[in-house]
Length: 43
Image 1: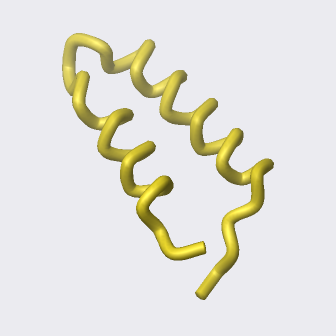
Image 2: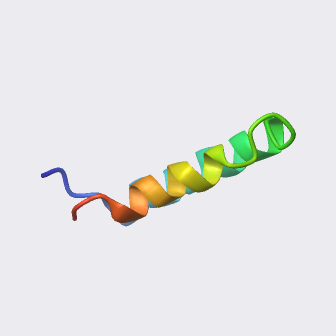
């Protein structure tokens, strides 16, 4: 299994934040799902 580093987690969080800003009205749940996916991935 691929190990997720803290830096990768931060990058994914940044991406999710930028997505949520751009698509706040279009798809408000997507960033939450993205973050949830990263948090639940095996370490």
